[in-house]
Length: 489
Image 1 (tube, rainbow, N blue to C red):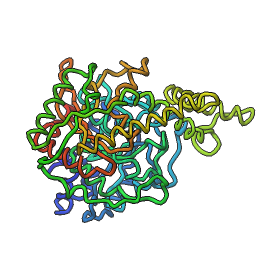
Image 2: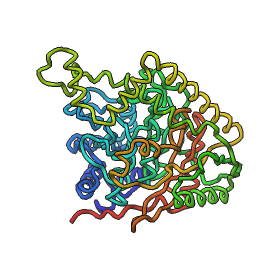
Image 3: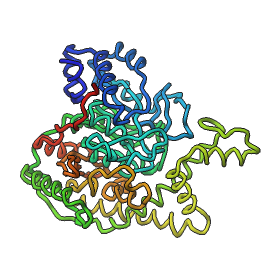
Image 4: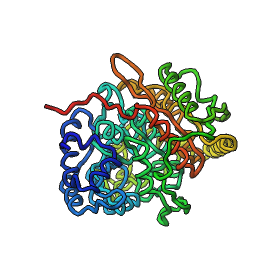
């Protein structure tokens, strides 16, 4: 096998080669380095690489471990010891992490090699990766379009074979939506299933780390290695972790899939609707029963999310004050001047917008009217899902209402940008698990743009939706398609 072919492999196929000693972990890193050099100038998926460090780990890799010798790209909001962790923000330029996040420790224990930090919307606040203060990431299917966000760098890297798999974070759809727009698999575990220790917090009651991969099996393999209780994360669930990959199969007989009427609404791109309709028919042909269900409080999800998420962000981002780490304003007159100018210089427009919104809804006189009321509606949304899961095994919907939109198209209209996550937000509010898998293409201006199918499962229902997604994936060829990015000459 040539260097050119290696990066195109799935994690599962790469594992087989490594274990049979047909390729070394060092050769894998070198092939990946060449692939990144050939495509990332156009795509802009990576913020930093440590080739020497990765090569050293590869030379010592135990390829008989579950992920032995497999490089995994890391969204630059997750701490990796000795590596930058900028959150794509000017306020953290120059910061290097003094420790590994729990998920990085778990990846290393499984033999994986954390390799490269990927671009994102600043502090994961966005749906297009255009809010990065460092660079622009482009959609590999059409360079004039966004890759989705906030984990757009991770999605674009996997889509272009510049990563075998990657970690992202999902606060309101930030794994699933870029996976859909970039044509890869994106998995959001149940809240608490994967430790958040070492993830820079955006909204602590919503954030969850998960994988972006080329196949559903690869997502299951990464989840096998990373799920589990962590005493350093007070929200971590102390529940048994099954072998997710072992439970994958192609049979959907006896499965009941709910189709929420509130998710098949006007405003969905006709090509997205048609692709999802075809996917539902395919699931039905594989043995699944399709049942109409209702999630009556769906209309309130976006509003509730942008009250609660901004409130938590305003509290979490108070730590970036110029005192302990990151950017510090020069020659401050006093502490207030230090705080004010450091934050004014360090944070971008979207982060400032959300801090202001969050501070407002938590302020005296408005707390009950906004934050407290939003928490009550969040509980109603959670109950909607709980009732639906009494009659169905999973819910099925589009991941995004539209294919990838043009760069700059929504930057001046925050509401339109926020609505890009309309089908993904509620899962975070309810704390359930969800996956996006490729289910077709839209043809727009001469380009094929990926479309994602979303499956939502009950809390701790990861094994079920992975099995369903795998069955669908293996019955189609959508996941085999790769964007027309050729290596640079």
